[in-house]
Length: 217
Image (cartoon, rainbow, N blue to C red; front, side, top):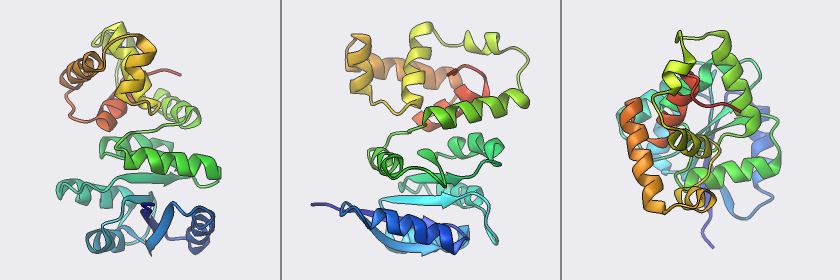
């Protein structure tokens, strides 16, 4: 059985140990390393080539977002899941724009942790309803656009529905089955969404969709 190699990046020892204890209960996961800041993380990602990185946002020396910017500039294929707390909502959109594959609260359940990791390995972006609600609320308090309706009109109703499903972590095949259309049609709609929003990935599309008020709970 293939095991997922996990790198944990957090400046709090207790958080790292807690995550290790949880994942060691499942033989699918192998902790290959841990780091206390983004700079250490970049070095270990190059050295260890993990399948998934669990990355804190606020750390000394180099933050999680700064590390993600470096990884993006290097076209790193390693997926990153952000570890977040209740006072970091404003940073979530930036993380998505940098390619984060999901967000986990540090007190998340074991099942949700495993589900997010498996989704990230598949190249999917998974946002739980709780995280979606918090991000949308945060953007509502710091609205950068004058008219959400005007922004939402960029996409057709079907494109909006597909983007919503993408934000919830569904794959193209699952979206196609749910909507009663061909999988290639879903992919064509995704291409159109990318073009309209000026992005080139699912995570960036979700980030822009949330920021512009196109996505709703």
